[in-house]
Length: 140
Image 1 (tube, one colour):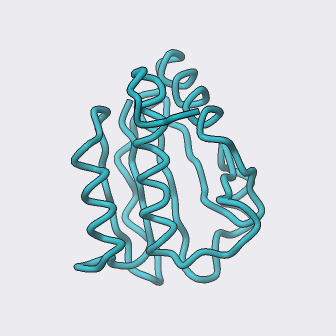
Image 2: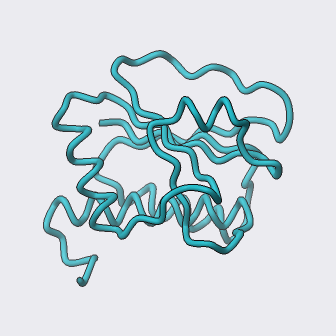
């Protein structure tokens, strides 16, 4: 299953960008990173059916790493070909986007900078895939 991160803004050469790249290189699952401009409509992603959409949102559900891994495993085993993880702009996501999402995911009650949230998401996806592979990275 493709893990597709779609984020507003350019991460560029930054400490957060280095973290994203570090975890992307370690991934054994296919991963794609797409950056959209801070404002305006993003280019529609290629339609792969079936697909799941996860919005990173402050109103979302905080999930332990194991629960995220189990969810990705279930979706993969159900034949989902792509899961899109959407990070919005500074104003977040619209009500319509929230309603259409398969999951609203939060990294706790704190507000995180967008670039740091992107790095945190990549680490959590790496962690989830290592949990499913039985790799010792996650020590629970």
